[in-house]
Amino acid sequence: MKFAAIVFSLGIAICSNTYSDEHEVGQKNKAFSQKTLKVKVGDVVHFTNQDPFFHNVYSMSETTAFDLGSYAKGSSKSVKFEKQGEVVVQCAIHPFMKMKIKVEK
Ligand SMILES: [Cu+2]
Image (cartoon, rainbow, N blue to C red; front, side, top):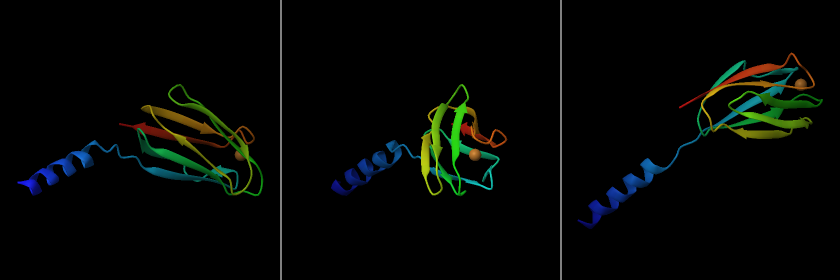
């Protein structure tokens, strides 16, 4: 009887735990490592600069707008995506650098 209660409460703990994934996007040779990326609501994306010069990461998308600023080689900054929808990510220093993140439920 006691064992059953433990298994039951453990089951609730696992189910109520909001699961979130982490994703890596690099910036190398003046390009994002992925053109498109699918993530789930609550996921975190790390943007890592792998070029020997500065990159900037920002988005003006309605669902998730952010500006991580400019940062040097080896640095990484993260964004948590809380809303469903499409997010276009760009670099202010290199306007042709562009990628799309699809945030799904
Ligand atoms: Cu750039």
